[in-house]
Image (cartoon, rainbow, N blue to C red; front, side):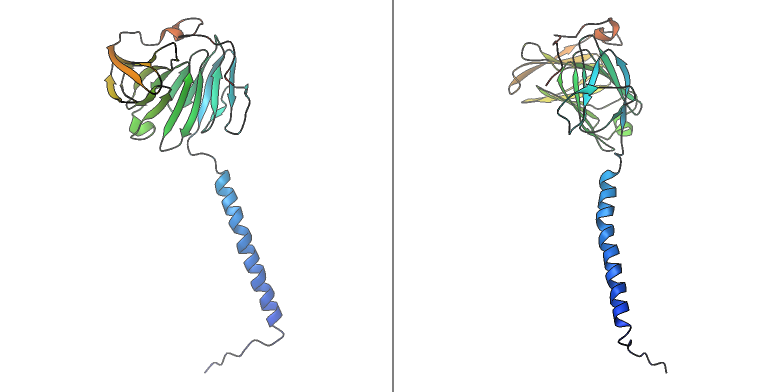
Length: 236
């Protein structure tokens, strides 16, 4: 029979030191793992694919605009601005979002589950080359404007005009399908249709219209100029 004897008194300090060292290593590893998780790159990243003229950007933690450069990564929390007569394009996978002159586009969320943007002013032309289920999620692309929320639910081409207090907001479907929601309004439109939102931001009115237009919006076919008005400087 094997008899296990107690450790001698001389071994106790050594065992205590080993246990203390092991506890320190385990404790130190926890914040390191948390730091690595926090620094992991986002699962979905776009890029600034095209710059024509003066284009600026700022990140979520910046209060100022900086000059943008081509191929700059596009992630959640960033905002992009085109000066008058300037244009830009963002690529997200095989999809592309064109920015008209004097346009601000904010990236609200961009990951494997969602692609949400905010359009405070200006206009964008969106070319979705893959289905909503394949490109982002079952929810599709979502673009918020002052008078409502636009969801692009299928592959296709779309023009969205933010509008302002003096100009109507517009959602135009060249091909594909979209859903427009605002206070008291929920409209689905298909190819060759448009929704015009007018009135105030809190109580807009909506009307569905047939819309016949070429394969790209007028501002992309012109050498310059804005879809509506051209402010002289970038937003604050």
